[in-house]
Amino acid sequence: MHLLELKNVHSGYDGKEVLHNVNLCISEPSIYVVLGPNGAGKTTLFRTISGIIKPQAGKVLLDGIEVFPSKEIRRKMNYLSHHNALPEEMTVYDALRFYANMEGGNPDEVLDLLKLRDLKNKKISDLSQGQKKKVSIAKVFLREREIYLLDEPTANLDPIVSKEIRDILLELSRDKIVLYSSHNLYEARDVGTYLILIKEGSVALFDRISNIRSSKYRVGIRANTDISKIVDAKVGEGGYYVLSVDTPEEAGLILRDLVNRGVIVTEMRQLDNPLQELFDENGDTSTAT
Amino acid sequence: MSKDETTSSSNSNRRDYGLIIAKRSILLSKTYAIIGCGLAVFAIFLANVSAPLSGLNPGGNGSGGINNLGSTSGNISAFYASSSVVSLIAVPLMVFASLSFSMPVQLLYVYDKNNGVLEYFLSLGMDQADVYKGYLKAALILSSVLLSLEIGLNALVGLFLGANRILLVEISVLALAISLAVVSFVTIAMMAFSSLQKQRTGSNQPLGMGLGVLVVIPAYVLPLLIPSRALFIDLVVALVVVVLALVTFLLSSRLIKREKLLP
Image 1 (tube, chains in turn red, blue):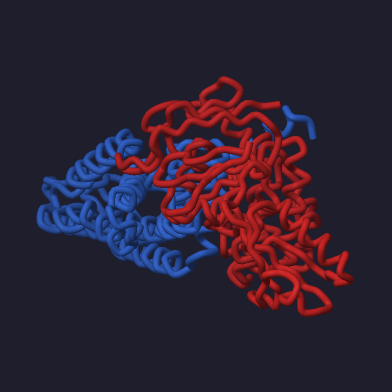
Image 2: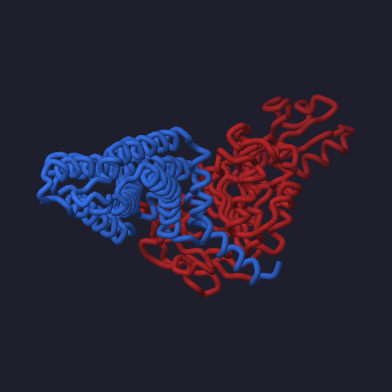
């Protein structure tokens, strides 16, 4: 198990501070979702942790060793930028081999892992944005490392490929620390175990996602009959009957009541994402204990 | 592969990193390479157009070089001096040729910076010095390749035409020293220019060529004005450019900041 620590870290560019007094302590292999509005400092956080930029103050430590001065420590991390970082004049295979030559690894293995065999001989410049993203992710998996810093890994990917990537990350997180930034709050809720919320360069929240609750719950129900006559619900988004409850337990009671009345409920889901409220300036970032 | 073998292999491949950059540069842009080859051919022509004349000296054995200036055979010496000057003017042309041949490296540097490739190199544990020295090495590799061909071909043609051998050596040594120094200076200056700009627009290849021309222009113009001092002028230019190159190299880590390698 590894220990990643940020102690009183201030970081930024050209003397301008983007991250202010960031303190984090991460040791459990898991997926840590990094959320934040545009310009909050997510990319700067990843660059600082990976040693790409030096903290203006404070320290980033991995297993007690400062990251920035140590090339050996920096090589224990894999970083995926939201830029593809691909030599566009090369074919997919040549690009992977280019990076494999620098850091080791087997291009054929990652071609199979990311299902890129069909694109092997295609030039990077001829690929779609989604395909480039896949190749960009592939290069990160050339070498196994201890920490993975992935900046929007599923951006520009179709739902099927996004799911494949998420499945790979879930498998990876069994014994690796994975920091993962995303603007997709539903994906973040499904994949992540922990949430790191960055707002205006500071860590506003660091907690397990399961501890984060919405202040209100809206539930969507599909049924074989009009349930608006039975419960206080209106047809709303996505064709669901939408009703508001105060707690998840109340939703369970409503479901039982409907079933007892002979209603066949075909689907029931929470329509709100508790993470969404964290972006709402007036929202309540309450956590349940 | 064991961990030690992997580390050793990676280190070895990082040493070849400059060579890989050089190959990528040529694939990226062939235009500058073609211009460089054209200039090289013209330089060889200019160096040898007066070759039969440069072989003359009052002693008649074709090996006196321009040391024979001031001999009693004034007309032949003066004629010899003029022909040597013409040959020596080929030196800055050879410099321009090798500089042009190395220009694609600057193009690739900006390309890689904007694509995030340089950022990824930093994430692999490389320092900014490791990164930009790879591009500098690539530029020197490319210019050396053309220089070797230029010097070799020039020597062959010159010997065939009976040119003065000492003059051939002078041209070769001057071209080598000035070319490598100019390429080094211009490459670092352009990467620094890209690094220092507030708006990250990248290095400007015509500006790089212009800088290279400016630095070497005295070697082009002054020998024509003062033919008796042509070799001395070239030596001074070589010394100045070598000093410039060394100074920029020593200051490179300050000029090319880490943050500016990021897209």
